[in-house]
Each structure stands twice: as C-alpha cells, then as structure tokens.
Image (tube, rainbow, N blue to C red; front, side, top):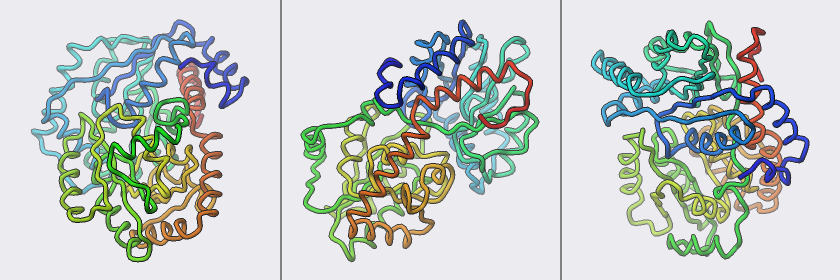
Length: 406
C-alpha cells in the first residue's frame, strides 16, 4: 500500500501532516529489531509500517535476532513473568539468554541513527551502545507490564535504563525509570487483507473451507493459542451461553516462532472440546489474513478473554469490522473499549457469558455497539496515527525536553 491509498479512510490532511513530519527526518536510518518475522502483533505492525516509513523518506530496516528453542523457552518465561506469573529464573537460564545476546551482537549489523528494539528478547543488544555513540536507542515494550514479577523486572531494568527512551502501549504499564517514557498504542492497517472489506461470497467460501455452517449464532475468539488468551475459559463461556441459546464457537489462532508453549495450549483446547461438533478449533497458519478477516466478519459476537494483555489487536480488528466485542478489562483493552459504548468489558466467565447472551438476544443493541466501536477505532487506532506517533517519537529523540506522552 502507498500513503495515498489511505486518504479515502483518514482524509488528505492526515497524509499531508505525515509528509511534513517526515521531511524533518529525511535521510535518517531507523533499524528495528525483534524476535520473529511472523506471528503476533509486533511482526504484523513492523511489516506494515516500515514500507510507509521508507516511502516518506525515512530509511527503515527490520532485523530479527536468532535463537534456538532453549533461548525462546527462556524468553517465553520472561514474557510470563513480566505478566506477573510467579516463576523464578535460574542462573543457567540467565546465562543462556546473555550468551545468545552476545552471539547476536557478533553477527548483526546494528549501525543506524535510531536503533529501535522491540520487547525483552533483544533487549541486551544495548551492550553495543558505546560502539555507536551517535545513535539513539529506543526500547519498545508491547506487553502488559503493569504488575511484573519483581525478579524479571529487576533483571531487565538496568538494560532499559541504558536506552535513550522507552515506549509503552498504555499509561498503566509505565514504570519508574531513569529514562524518558513515551506512550504509543499499537494500530491496525485498515487496508490490509486482514481488515479490508470482503464480499459475502468470500466469507462463505472461508466458512465452507472450515466446515462452518451459519445455521446458529457464532461466538468467536480469534487469537494465538496462549494461556494468557485463556481459550479454555472461552470454552467455559460458550458452554454457559449454550444452556440458554443454541450457538456455536469458533476458536481460531496460530502460533509464533518465539512461543514454544502454543502447541501445548492448542493440544489442551483440542482435548477439552472433544465430542462437541458445535466447537470449531482452527489452527490457522501465518499469512491466513483473508481467513481471519472472514471469520471475524461471520461472527455474531467476538470475545477476547485475556488474563493479561498488552493491547489485543484482535480487539481492534473486530471493532473495525463493527462487531460487538466482549473482552476482559485488562491491559490495553480498556483503551479500545468504553464499556457499553464501544464494546463490553468483563472480568469473569459468568460475566462474559451474561453479556454474550444479552448481545445475542438484542441484535439492534449489538449493531449499535459495533458501529460505535468502529468509529472509536477510526479516530484512534489506525496505522496512520501510529505512523505519526513514531515520527514524533523519532524527532523527540533529538530534543532534550522531557516529553512523556506523544
């Protein structure tokens, strides 16, 4: 996509502002580094935003660190502990993490004006900062760190505080740090295959592909198979609703190369749904954007029953499609859902089931809720707003003012 393609969605003034901001960064090189090229919201955002930065004249690159299964098992533990899980890192795990970081430092070309590190996996690359004295270093945290396990936070904080600035998705994630903090929520691309309008024929083709018949209401959660997304709890919600309304459940998601737990979660989900032909468990490979889009558009109610959540782009996607959403009041989800206005928030299985029943029994209310949700996303969480925030962030690195919120 080109920037001009977005004019029809956001207006000409927004595009002109982006061009104006980018002129002040002309010739700057930005190098993004994360842990996976496919799977999850981080890779998806980078895949969309980097070509637009380059079109604007900001030279943007994207590199992925290398690590074996043991390394990603350790960083998955980091992830869980940052979400507050009561675990403990062993000295051997820390040693493995640091050794893998050193190996990446030896092989990666990190040179750039702005080095943009995403999440904990590549955080220790900051060790190379003294070699690039003119470079600006950013650490972007995409996950919910509102109540981190103290051991992992104490381990990571000295690395974070070597960066020139840190970036979080929600005010509730901000921590006491010695470096500047910026608050930038994620976004979706309204023109991508996952979010663009689809014909009714395309939607029906996808449903046939997965053996789904629209003979009863569809409840859906489209999300990675991850304990923190609570797919097992979604099944409990469905079973409570099923007592009163004959419905079906779609649990669809994929895996990420840096998440070794996902296959285990998928196995547990598959075991729990045995014998119920109204539950469709779909393991969707990466790049199945049209399929995800169609499943979301076919759903009558979409859930996101996360236990902890950095932001939940799956919620953003569903709201953009004007779907009524019931989601957990955790992490960045309340930034997107204003309860009873742009969606419904819940904290329990019983509460979630209650709201799903309300929506299925009140289609006009469900429609109104979905329309309000779409407008909220249009105003706040589209890719062009995200691009603007990143341009302002890069510019702020060259000014000493203590800006904490873009």
